[in-house]
Structure formats: structure tokens, C-alpha cells
Image 1 (tube, one colour):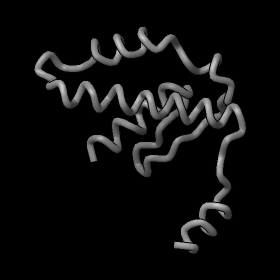
Image 2 (image 1 turned 135 degrees about the vertical axis):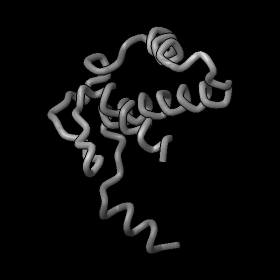
Image 3 (image 1 turned 180 degrees about the horizontal axis):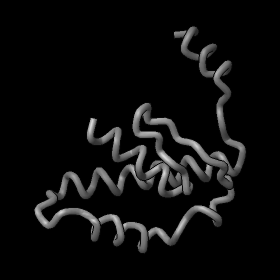
Image 4 (image 1 turned 60 degrees about the vertical axis):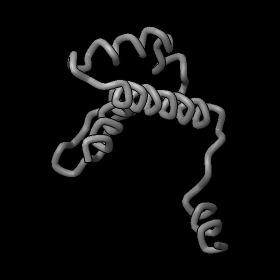
Length: 96
């Protein structure tokens, strides 16, 4: 659950969203333009690592950087309209 909570926090931070702790909903209006929500990769990585406790192991550092990378790529996909609708995803799952 810790990783899920962290992923929600990262998603919220990178999109200037608010997290409703009671239900883990993300709420707010945000831009889908990467230049509005993304800081330079190196700066974001350094800030992420700098905010971790001193006793954080390498696996946790790598996981957190991995999550940031996936969020960035998802934001870029959304800004370029490379998304899948719920209906398309349901049809794909049903075909399995």
C-alpha cells in the first residue's frame, strides 16, 4: 500500500492536484501540457532523492525514480492524445 500511496502523491505533485485522503481521489483542474507540469528530469530526480530518509535503500530510490518516469511518460502520452478510452480497454480485455 505504501507504493500506491507514494504513486498517488507523485501524480498529485506533478499535476498540482489535491489528494482526498479518505478515498484517495485526485481532484483539481490541471493542464495536460508537459511544459506546464514537468520540471527538468535531473532536478526532479535530485529533489526526490533528497527528500528520502538517509537510510533509504537503493531499491526504494530506483522504484521512486521509476514511478516518476512512468508518470512523465503518461503525461506526455495524454498531451499527445495517445490514450485509450474505457470502452476500448473493456473491449480489449473482453477479447482475452
